[in-house]
Image 1 (cartoon, rainbow, N blue to C red):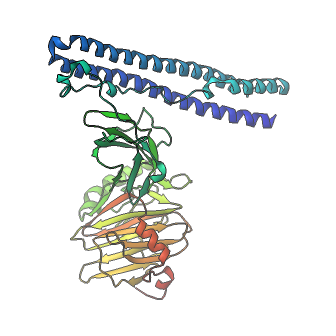
Image 2 (image 1 turned 120 degrees about the horizontal axis):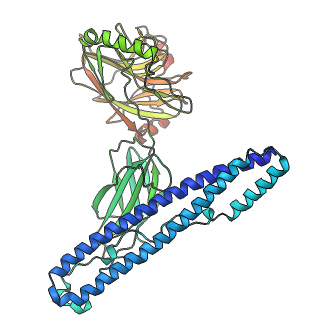
Image 3 (image 1 turned 135 degrees about the vertical axis):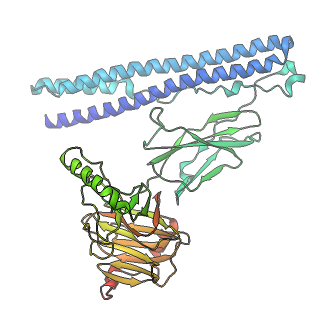
Length: 497
């Protein structure tokens, strides 16, 4: 009975997933129907404008072409309505079967339960939900019925609809996601020398598989692409995936969209946690500035809010990279004293991650690195065995050094305009780079025993943060080649600050 119950649980899960898939397809069909109606209306309006210029000489032709458009609309509407009806019936039957299966879990009598399980299995095998094609038989596009009479005015008797390019085919194998850029490549199913250019549309999403109609961002468009591939550069990867589709255009009209493809675009995204930052720091999501008067006017307010937060309303949650539950934002003490520190709000628990930091030109002193969550409220980055950083100081004397466990390693390289931080949690490595040239500045070798948080310390100046970045290809190459400048945490043990 236990094995049958497990099998039934799997069937229920499969049915629920299929129902969700069908519901998404029904949303797509409804959206397609709406688009078909809108596009048909637009095409008819354009057709009316063309015929207005031709007057009575084109009355017969006009009547014929209007009829063609309406017949095409009716034909496509009937196809879509038929699919919609089939899907609704399948979903209704599947929901009934799901409800019956769920009720069957409560049957206590083994023989009756086995009979119900066999009956459910037989019904699932015959269920129409698993035989449906979840692709519209027709699209909402009516561009193959668009007209342009600029040349045909002299050939009224041979007037016909313009040829429409076929839909391109995107090849996911030829597409490339690297260095916060996405290259999309496609080809035409057959040669067409009338194609003038291509249009590519894209949007970010957190759903794998076919694009969803509801709760999605709008498509963004790149027009007038002359080749058969296009690269989007400088992207911030703040969603798990991106959808892409392409259509071909001749001089007059655009063809059908290609089947959409979904490419993975995961990267580390985090903001600065102002719930535990030092009161002398003015913190926003991606930037922090030194504010010498910040603590005086805000301390009493923040203490009041913190006390209120401890007694009642919970604080917002800190996210976590990995499978563990996220830590709670505001669950640690606020940094104080001379620890002018702010941490990231996302813990790193596994994997390789990269972010960049840029200091203001007049910044006197700052540190960039990572720290365990246990970093004390009086602790400064690099002065404990729970934090690693590089430190830049231009006050009184210029210093550029790596710091860990209150020991320093002076770096005999120029301070870059922007610093790239690479954290390989599983490999126990924290490396710093010139973000522009990708020159390695310093690497710590260690074994992280706890999740780490990005950490920043600032005095007299400000920092801006860039996240949503993939590990650059140049950094991956340098990691493999073991650059000669690589240092380690152990090399700091013999150097006293």
